[in-house]
Length: 337
Image (cartoon, rainbow, N blue to C red; front, side):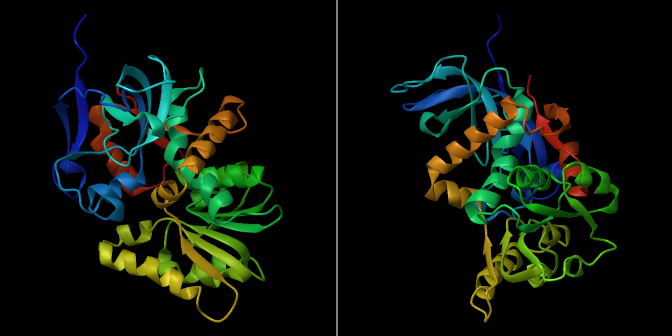
């Protein structure tokens, strides 16, 4: 039997997808408190586009070459010294921010969430970033209450779909803004569609929305803030409009700073920016609890995450082009084997 070999998706230079390379890498070895996993599935995220283009604050200090990959589901194949309670062959999940688009990698044992037996690895991988983000936006950041009126921007995207599904489970009334071509999907997921190219979402609901969840940032979040009802809450979690308009990191950080200034204006509206990394750093147990809860929902088929396509290493650069173009109705997942 041949020795296992490691491959990774590497950013060779900041910029477009042509700066991505598939490279042979050294085989990692689990250190004290670590496990090594054989990667079964790793999500391809819009956040990876931001990292590749040097527009993601949490990785701004990184310089090429480095490996991409925000999350993974893998099978433990090596235990480091001092690791207890984890078995070889067990399936686990983690959010790594970088380095998971690989055949093998090491992880800190204390960060892992067990993946229930029988789950499809690609479906499980969709939950680590996108669905945990959605769950925490609803329940940790906005703390939605049954019957509240909630507007979701980018409703056809990975996080947007998760927000609609989980919002329906939470008993809120949902509107989803997206391209008109996605209206049927948004209705299927339990929300009222808003064609943002033809409709003014600030005029859709007299009195305004109780919560607006915005990963787009069109017009620097100004219109989303205007769409709030008195006492409403805008929670921003991304800025894809700024990325598509070729804005630099300073401009995008200015947008985020403005959100917090708005909360100081006269009136009762509030605004904040959600970062899954900041929340995980502050409340690491929440992340593991929320991901485990999502795995339970998947195991009982209470949720049905959409995998648009399972991607090989050689298809990743093209997958990034598709991510940037938008219009996907499911998640692209790298499956190394």
